[in-house]
Length: 173
Image (cartoon, rainbow, N blue to C red; front, side, top):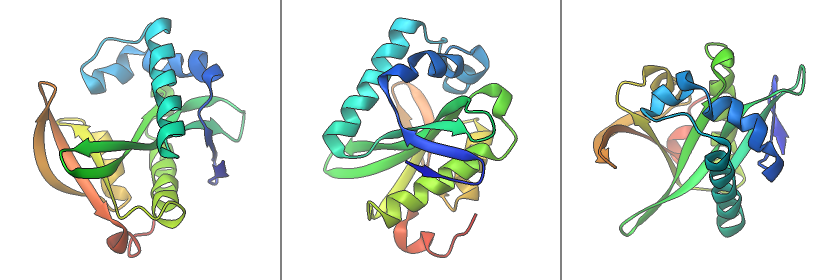
């Protein structure tokens, strides 16, 4: 667990399902993924998958909690990505729609970037962002990531933004 000026980032827990359903059950949030809102059963599976990832790899998603009122507003963290022989970590973030445009995603993403490089000593991070999701792309760029390539995955186009640890030392949010 760690903190930023406005957030507490703590490991995700099984009991976060209902709070996270306020994020992933919102059609405005899910429009970013071109997906239907989650129901409770799907949210439970998603949380379980992330908890299993945490145990298996030693890192995963953090639940984001506003310091001011204790409200869970989303998640931010790392997911291991295996692409053939290449293993890398993806930095991702999801916030409640009523928390957009306040700099909270950037604050959380910068903290997770610093954790990935400082504590975990990961060599490189990527973010996969659905083509057209400019707000998410801006968050990644604000923390130093740069567009590397556009790819097709699961029938959708994604921007791949990346940042190496050596380059991150020159970036401050």
